[in-house]
Amino acid sequence: MSGARVVGLGLCTPIGTTTHLTLASLRAGLVRFAETQVEDDLGEPVRASRLSLLDAAMTRTERMSALARQALVGVRPVLERLPPRGHVPVYLGLPEAGLGAEVKRAALVSALLAEADGRLELVKVHEGGRAAFFEALATATRDLQSGRAGAVALVGAVDSLGDAASLEGLSKARLHLGRQNPDGRIPGEAAGFVVLTRPGAAKSLGLEETGVVLGTALGVEPRPFARTAPSLAEGLTEVLQSVRGDGVMGGRRVDGVLACQPGESFWGTEFSRAYLRNAGLMPEPLRVHLAGEG
Image (cartoon, rainbow, N blue to C red):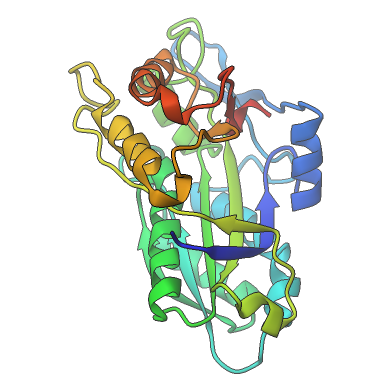
């Protein structure tokens, strides 16, 4: 059991530039996507879920930097209440290589650290795509538990596939939703940061606890989406079995399931296979909420 406490949250998404606006939009069921200036091979515009305040001409790195800086605004009040001495360790999740335009990591990190006026220190970067946040979370909670991270840690992730170069790449690979691929995806962008503390530290720092990280579990899928071999969901099955067998669960079912999978049928099939092997962990009736649903 990790037991790390959540004391701060900052979000910037296409449906809200703050945590409050994003959560309110999610509760209202709002979805935001639109046609872009990029056209596919059939001459049809590629659709994307993008923050309308950002210039369409911005590069992927520029969009990610802007999203991350705005998300940091949400946790700044928490950071400002910490003792002035010392740095807060940052555990950051970034996109995986090969999908979308190249990310200029040094420029992104520099913009991120500059936004916090020298209060942050980058400790670890995980470039694992959608899994990157969970990898960063697992590392941060482990370091908090061991004392390596001190009393407070900042965990976050940022990505954007809304720039022209990334959209063109997705179109050429026929991964986007359209007539050429009715099972494709609508690319998007977002950034989020969570401030964590060790158990018992929040009170001494004058911070309010809003959640607890009971535990984390990671796995590797031997037949991922990019492979031609059909997935048997071994990686996801292993992860769910780890969660199910964790002593803190006590054999209980979870109250809900929130997933960050894209909309392609591949991911739904993968989850269904893993679910059937771990039905005792899941709520009944089962309803999976997708983070990209809006």
